[in-house]
Length: 569
Image (cartoon, rainbow, N blue to C red; front, top):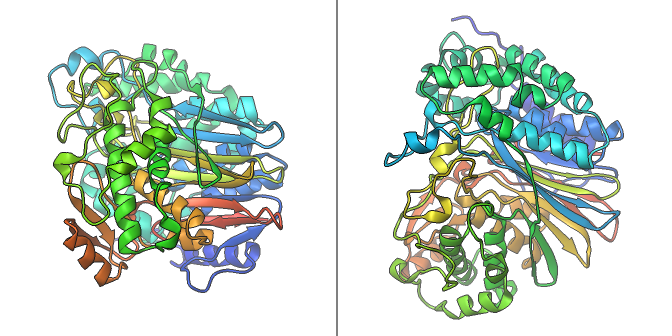
């Protein structure tokens, strides 16, 4: 079979090496990837191509918002399994000059026709009926218009070029395509873009998406109206409705990205600013507030004690998320109570120091605001795919941006002629027994994405986040604890072994790098355990930037669990 390969299949690795040589200074010998250092700007994403797009914008004089938007468009090309124009997201912005924190919610919404059509049915998790109203274009355009300095055409140029000229696919992307081969094969437009002669490509294969380049060029020239009112939207709706889906032009026309107040808290003197409802930042803060009642810094990480206390805190925070976090425009969310230090202290008192709390005893706090509480294992679909972008500019503005199409390759459909992979976000609604996440027309379904910013002594310090479905909450919490409690460098914190627990199970899943004696001790405390790989994609792909406040140096860290790349200058 003929395959269009690069002469060197290792080009993507070569690019990474060049980036390290050009942009890094001192790395950590103990880590797989080196920390990257710079003075004027830093970006960390899940793809070297998206990071390079953002760097191009920073070098051209753009600010952190300009660069983050450029990276967000480019990552949809280079990591198409995780996000794109057919998806959604949430970003948190810190503006240094005004000491202002803002968040932009561009989560998907439920199409009107889906409500009567799906009454009493299991919500679809793939195909045209699983498509919710996309928010990415609206959210990125809003961020650029309100807080950026460049035009849409300028920041989209790198992504358009990447889609037209193509890029060599990495081993990671090849693996994802192989894992999703059958559903890609089922859609002709998906097959035309992501398969090579109807077979999964090999690493180094040059992947191009000319239809997506054309779509993005129209948006760059005409603005987001082309997507929500014009020809692009009509092409999407025609394809969705021709295949039994629910999205309409009315849904697109009524969609709005939303400015939100971020969720805010503090942890051992550091200010935490995270994405609020209907996503997971408040849950990260609640877990940290509970952990603050224990001397975790003295326990080390990983240790039996620190893993146990964090696991117990996380389980209680997850239980509260399940019951209380939803779309604030449809349901009352008791955010003040959830983020209260007094409430966290009450939750901390429930934690036994020498044993795991049985699943039957993990309950949400008694805040008395819901008509009906979610019970048992009822919950929303846990999508495995997402991506994260962190950016800091020369003025120390910070952006943390997490976006998704839900599952890997979303609904696994592309409207012909658009190049856009559509989301399958409808699967993230819960059954009627969980009213905070029940299906309603125009409602945003909940997910656990948690882009997070941190201030130290009132000054910008850290932007960080990760994909990873339900593991997002635990991973971001672990990352922040590694940095704040244990004084780890950014790359060490990212590469440290991870674990995951949840309120509705007694299982603790962990990377294989945990010492056997730690795992045996946890088993003795009542945990069931499941060992996964050394650096397992299951636990996400964190990206972040730290500002060294003493030297002014920007330190970028990227996750080897994905094609992470930090670049600065």
